[in-house]
Image 1: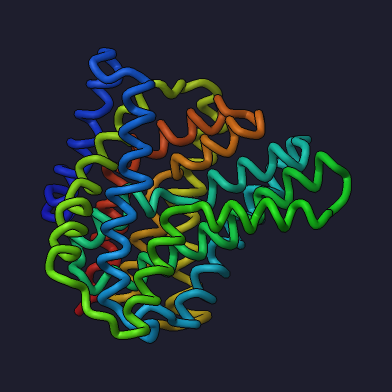
Image 2: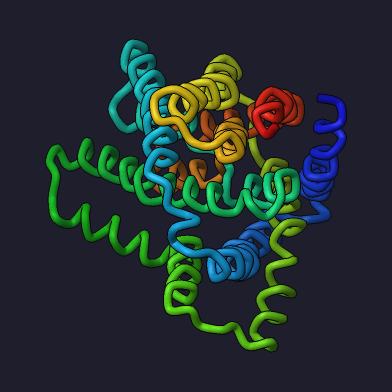
Length: 311
């Protein structure tokens, strides 16, 4: 585990650097917002396009992987929801807590770190998980929150979901890359150099942005944040492990990548959703802060646990 921990340290050190820059106000909240936009819309999109354009759909799509990950994630989602309902929370707040418990930072932290640790073969599984999170669970939160507020389902919700997916640069870049690959189109050398240079900014930019954004997060409601962090860092990888190792078995390498991705801390976009809908943003903020701090050790522990399955 020590070797793996030392290999993950540079990633968390970059997050720490961003945190210090944000905490000292050397990097303001406005600067962090613009850096996050750059990474989200440009650098990370270039990285995802580059990876997906060099993969075939057969290399990415794996029914058992999707089924196993979905089963494990939905299980944790339901556990968090049931606990929230027993605590007397309304549907919207319960949905936000469930999102914290089940959705990890695959885009900004998982893809760069796990590809570095596991190699380029980890690209396919990571992109599949990212697509499932964005398409299934980002849609689910919109349905639950909007439906609970309106008291009914409407076609407007479907329109909101559809537009949200079409406007998401990660979904668009993956779809464009896979389409490029499907038509077997060559990537011209200048274009390849362009996406290489732009995509190279994704890893340091994303990690620094995570840290800088954490500097503005509060650590209130620590008991709830601790419970949600336990769900995300312990229950989620455990349930996903059952899904991909027992219920819907996949190859050992893909299983290791998927379980490791499930062990990532709460995703930052959950806070954006909480802020957008005005639902418990401080609670989500604390969950992101606490889970990210604990994940410095817990992620290494999970990767060390699954590494033997790599053979």
